[in-house]
Length: 282
Image (cartoon, rainbow, N blue to C red; front, side, top):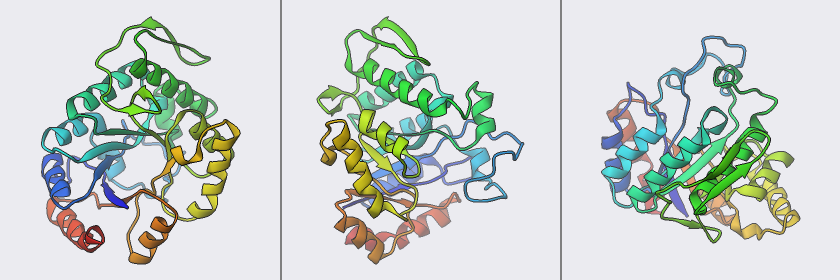
């Protein structure tokens, strides 16, 4: 079982280049970055971790720019968004960014996507709570068409793409088509699992509670649409590790667990990486 890390990189934290080199040198397989374009000062939508809202939500770096920096100074480290807020993003531009990153990095990109918890942030981008899940679904499908097809098109309720050319294509092949792995973040539930079974390659559960029980429901969702359940990976996210927890994940067939780093200056982040060394060595 592989171990990756996730962190809110900000204008006050360890810098991306230093972190990327240290993470790769220590034997971690991946580095995942969250996304918030901005945080409205309204607290109408409470923080998912409880109020007050942590400072790093207001200050996080753009993940796509930062992943470009990370892949430029590493050779094997995979990068991913954990998570990208596709309901706040233009799918054509985002497809280009992801394909360019994958092309230039030699196929080291995963795209973690989600629906977004901050409704005011979403509304500033013209979205709504009522449509966000349907919008994310169509944007992923349109992006996958742009990655895979010589002449891509998509016509849905929320996304309309006339036949178009788009290069570069990603280096990776996913389910027999050119693309990158797409993993969906969120709490277990029927709609989430239907979306994963339809268009994604795995699930990013935040924290570990209930993962074992939910995996049967995810497999059932894959069966319902004629997909092989073994195609879908489960990657627990933001984990604070202990040996028993990691052994449990490994017993479930989970291929990778993403450990949480503090959004902090270099000395604190590197000390935390050092504390994870026994788990990497296992």
